[in-house]
Image 1 (spheres, helix red, strand yellow):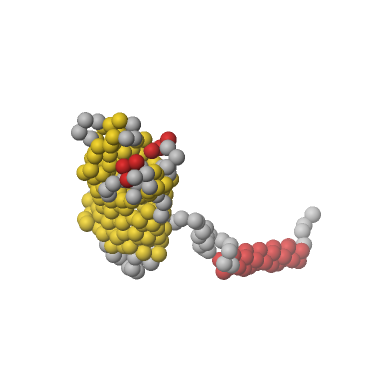
Image 2: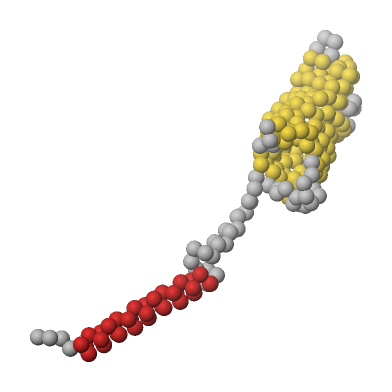
Length: 254
């Protein structure tokens, strides 16, 4: 049976119209996807906000000068100290104000000639003695970092220092007798220390792409190491004892 040429021409026209509609629809859909701000591969994915977008670490070594003062002993004491720590810096380059913190260990020492006395016979016979004070702390120190905009090699820092004493001892050395006082188990010593801290930092050089940083910090204590101690060497009056610290840190920023 022969097919009608008229019907074939109608089918061909219908097929052409359908094909044109499909192609036009696909073209319009692709253009809409490309222009839509949230769709298609041509639109960039918005960045996901994070709490901290950068962080550098700096291990450092510390040398300090410590001033022990107060009325708990006959004379103030002065001495060096050593330590170290790990600094975490969350400040971007050129950011005016940022945040950083560190975990540190400090070994503090102070000596005072004739700074105390020893009991030769109970509390009745006292002899002068040189005093040696030893304090060791584990520290957590948060800081605000202040710097100018753009690339620079220096910054200021202001913050606090929270310490926990792992050793607090006074050695009183007389001519014939040496006495030891461990303050950690006494009612007069404070295990926790709180200081206000400020300082400056400067980049000295670059070593294999890492900055060599020198920091100078100064701290003033708001708490005493010893409080209300009735030292018989001072006549039994109640006295306090605290430490003022100046320190220099040398670290390599990673």
